[in-house]
Amino acid sequence: MFEKVLVANRGEIACRVMQACRELGIATVAVYSEADRDAMHVRMADEAVCVGDAPNSGSYLNAANILSAAVITGAEAIHPGYGNLSEDANFAEAAEACKLTFIGPSPEAIARVGNKSEARRTMREAGVPVMPGSADGIKGADDAREIADELGYPVMVKAAGGGGGRGIRIIHNDDQMKEAVSQASSEAKSAFGNGELYIEKYMEDLRHVEVQILSDEHGNYVHLGERECSIQYRHQKLLEESPCVAVSASLRRRMGEAAVRAAQAAGYTNAGTVEFLLDQRGRFYFIEMNARIQVEHPVTEMLTGIDIIREQIRIAGGQALRHEQGGIWFNGHAIECRILAADGERGFLPSPGTITHWEFPSGPGIRVDSGVATGSVVSTHYDPMIAKVICWDEDRASCIERMRATLRGARIEGVKTTIPYHLQLLGNAYFRRGEITTQFIQRRLPIPHGGGR
Image (cartoon, rainbow, N blue to C red; front, side, top):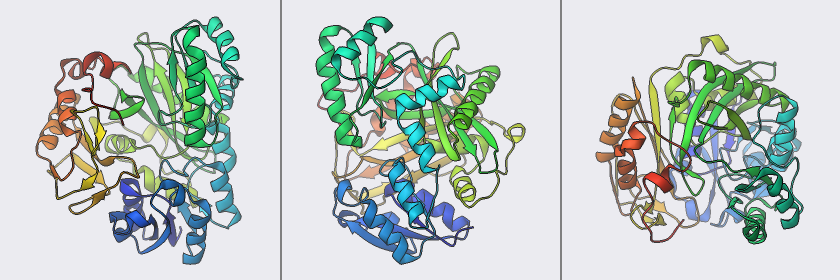
């Protein structure tokens, strides 16, 4: 096991990783920007190193400074969290060159699944159902039109080298193609340094369902069930839950087996997530694989009792998986709400500022993952998510009520939050019946106008 780990991230995920390290008796090193000098993850770590200016590009994406911080502090490994450098194959390779263990998949596996068009090809060859679309990246708007004519409109262009809802456009006819391809490519290049796009058939009334996998260096693979992630605004998830009400035990087995085949085909080791679209007839299609821990991993932890972060660290240290598929149980129901510092009544406009009061209820089945507290500054430089509230109960209806009670009891002052919107969502009749698709927000509970985030 490692003696010291550098956490190459900020906010709640940095705090989450540090807590797991504490439980394993591992010392931690935080990195921080000038804006985060007094942040919670800095105070929580055993050591901390400033790696640059406030913008991500000058600090949390500054690979050279982060690697230097690891070397000078004597860290043996780096945990990247999610976002930032977590799916950067070059960063993982550079870490290895510095004799540091990257807590995640190999650089080769990251590259293999990181390029979405290449990942689709790998999955087809492995017999994993793939959403109809281009075999490779598109060469421009004219190429995209030819593929769209074969697939039939509507179609979706997506960034080949990234995720998180960026570099995506839905296209309904030929006239929209040129502008959509230009915008998506420009957005993808800005976000990921890679403007390559590919095309998929766009289908409505689908659920976005993902499967968590774990694998080790000894050839062992397991899946930890599925998460329902269909509640999205502009391709950004707002609420996740597990299990998915549309997934039967037999479908869970088939999706889990497909996810394991996907990981095996990619030569994947550590924690990862295989994302599918699920139609109303129980047919599922691979869309991408995320080579990192997911924001929504806590719902799986609450359901299975498995600490995925600790497993990541153990696997990276060369240990074998401690779980076999037959010994993994899915108990009850879990829901996660992503709480943003944003105005839910004005189009989710960001609400930066200083948090003057921070309070959440506690009790059985309630978990709050956060990287802020009273006195914390919410900066415009970073993602506005300030907390993840996760609730567990014996069944979905009870879990919804526990989450509603928890959010009603929360007190956050100094910034506006999306809690009022989440409460509307949890009270929505369609949501409560489990009638959910990726178009839920647009159709059932539109975000009030007033801007976007």
